[in-house]
Image 1 (cartoon, rainbow, N blue to C red):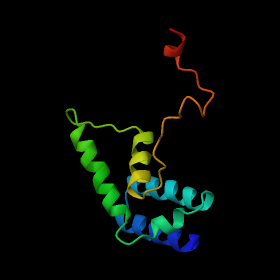
Image 2 (cartoon, one colour; image 1 turned 180 degrees about the vertical axis):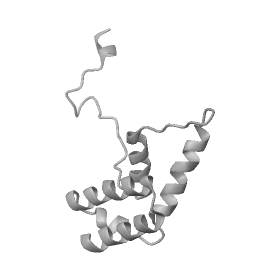
Image 3 (cartoon, helix red, strand yellow; image 1 turned 90 degrees about the horizontal axis):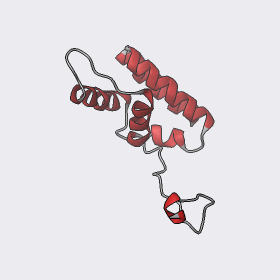
Image 4 (spheres, rainbow, N blue to C red; image 1 turned 120 degrees about the vertical axis):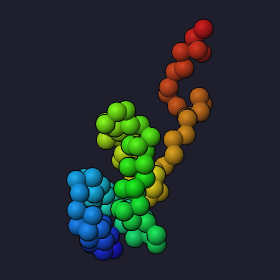
Amino acid sequence: MKDKAIMKITEEMMSANDSLSVALEEYLTNKIENEDGVAEKILKEGKNLKEIHSKIWEEAKKRKKGNCAYIPDEEVFQMVDEYYELVNHFEAPSKMDSNIIDITDLL
């Protein structure tokens, strides 16, 4: 299944033929090869590089200042993870379950 997912995103990247699609394909290929369950989500019906590519460009347009726009790599890859549902949403640890000290506890 991993090979099929890699082939799918590679074909999508080749048809787009731009640097953003290449970066997205490399990122997703790495996740497919190193994380369980990613291939299935990449192969999910209706999910494709073209759509997430468009979402990233729309976000860049919102941030445009003059002739420039910037989205940090971390945010782009977070958008990709969310699009393909590869993210476990952050949950704040409870005080009982963690070793984290809240500074307000000391006041």
